[in-house]
Length: 140
Ligand code: ADP
Ligand code: MG
Picture 1 (cartoon, protein in one colour):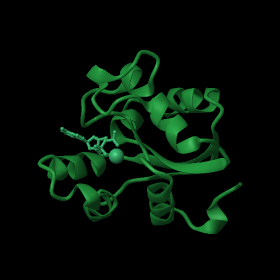
Picture 2: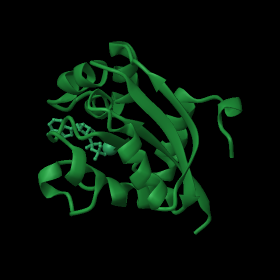
Picture 3: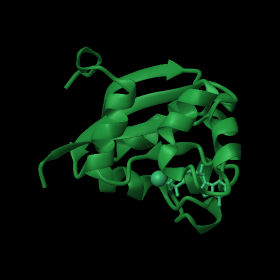
């Protein structure tokens, strides 16, 4: 498997509790490298644009409200098999189902406020990266 990039968000529940360092320590311990990073406060419209694939889901409104309720850290992770590796260390969407040692098991507050986002495919990673970053912001 070649070097790959994935897109990561540290969500408002994580920034609110000052957990960005602890979460990024887990990311770096897994062997992934943070090659781009910035802190943003998303508008409601920006959150809706990012989660547009979920527009028909019952939780869409609440999710966009939550994602624009505080600052987030958006970042690009690089490494071997980065998409699957990051999904692995994130753990299941619902922290109640997440494996021990995963970020969501350790830090998530609920199925919604689950501390981190990670792309679910290489194709979506490229789309999500280009939503937030320009080429000159990526050190790789
Ligand atoms: P993941 O983030 O694990 O890829 P999804 O893409 O299915 O999960 O959902 C996107 C985000 O929407 C989740 O991370 C979570 O914040 C929120 N979410 C998912 N399912 C629910 C739900 N049943 N109720 C409330 N929020 C949810
Ligand atoms: Mg998803």
